[in-house]
Length: 286
Image (cartoon, rainbow, N blue to C red; front, side, top):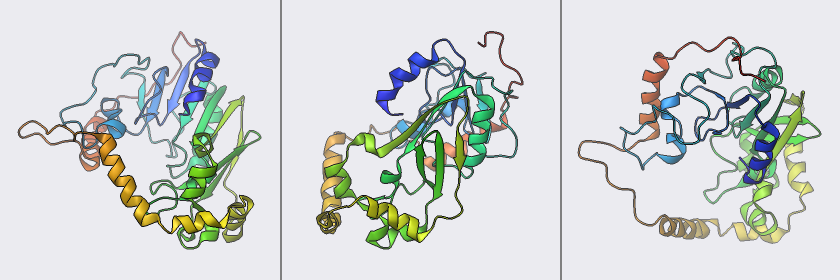
């Protein structure tokens, strides 16, 4: 979540009932409920523990500052055909941060957000950042499915086509973003009340993608500088290793560190024992 908005969100929430959608990797501690396809016990491991923490480390009990609990952590595939297990307008505030760009059906999720929430906050990487070519030659994040635009209480989801990686008229050079933009330009967000609109347009293709890059009026020098990408990538990796300092501690004898494969395998045991989701709001709901 964009740090500058966190305090604003807390002030808006007050004592209202709050849901975090897709918060598994780094849940919003103020949330009363979290809904995610991954279980409560493995929260935070994805962002913080891969290659660093031993596989025996999970979080089966509440952590400091968390308002949600195991009981209010709801296991649910948000892209499934099943409605979210909450009644209409149950939540005073719904947060969905850096989730919609990842999932297979953001239109479905947006419809459910509007149904169950009275207000909320949505955040994703910006169109600019998702159309920027990285040091490794990849345009945008490799695991993201969508480029997202938000304006005038409306959200547009543009599928990421393979031709983004082929010609400079389709992508933004990283050197331009680093020199001309700031961190705020790398995200887009929407505060909404009552409802918002959303779409996946069926008319965008080569021309629309190229027109977006053209509209930025990027000086040619940045494309020339980007040709030094392999050298810059080597230098960035070297500096990254220096910033990290000492390597992660070795695991205890006979104990491996978490990997993504091990994490998702471990998740299966928790999901098999998942408890039913609540069908109605708690008595303290406002």
